[in-house]
Image 1 (cartoon, rainbow, N blue to C red):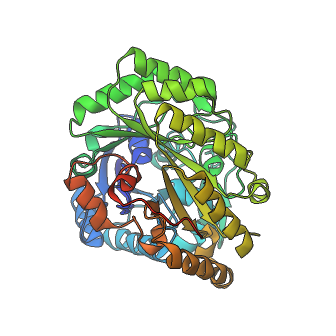
Image 2: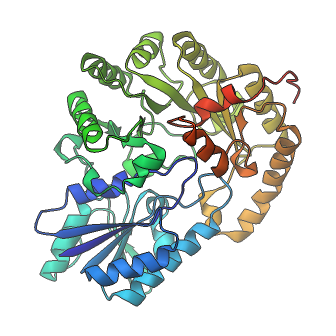
Length: 449
């Protein structure tokens, strides 16, 4: 079959993200199928570009990837869904081929998005096995029972198959096909994406990673990870930085240490960053990460209140956050802590306690976001109610944003601005740009909230 894969994501802040999920599905497609990737990330007129590419290729099926529901700056959700509505409309007007939608964003609420966007099929979670199975059934004219996590419309409702009985073995999958990547990802941003495992056993209340990848951790062989990295660097010489896209790099701790040792043994020199978790973070791991070239950690600290951390089921305490910060400083790894203010059940006083905690912790960098719920995209009444607390939070941050000029507040455009990021890159700064903000602003002398 002729398969047109469409990467709809156009988010460029803080960096453009290589569509590694779609590239992995393409890499694991049986060779008898002919596939193209239509990446809309850099297109000035995405609708026109999509229509032109589909018209030229004449696909038998269109596979649309949906990376996010809400914007990366936590500013909202409605424009994202309107955009995907538009893309599906373009596909319908250009070809009679059926539409399958998948990706991390779709996997968060597949039944709801099937009703809203009205594709022919949807696949939630991993698709490297389910999507080829769907193609087999379409070719043979057979039914669709038994394809794990497949969703389809029928009799005015969504028919959802049961999840597959198990998760994919990472060692059996071919690595993402980077030959299809638009060179502008590397030329303009320089960041490569690398995955060392899938699945997250943590139970953070709001997190979608377990929905997308499952709770069963499945690790890759460290040698295969470094092999993929070297192959990518040879193919894409403009790469200047690597981001580990694991939900949490350092869990399980033994795997993270093994990956670091493999990178050290094989003399990996390119700097890399990752998501890290305070759980189980110890000095040995910190030292191995530093020796392996880790240039920064992004930590989902979320709150400075132990009560809120418990409510969010984070599994760690504020003292464990402090411990990670101490160890990171000891080995010289910059740490960026992200805090989500105004989560369900949180009061404005809770928010103020978190701000006090951030001031006292004084991490290398902090990203402050006011909560936006994915479900708000489909429930305008709930969205309006939550917006009241969100407005109060953003007002307080606006009033005090100059006191800590190395903090990033995406919803206010504070240290989260396309012009600033372009300027930093033009002056040779690479990787996640939070690593450079603190060195470019004068030190704050007033630490009052």
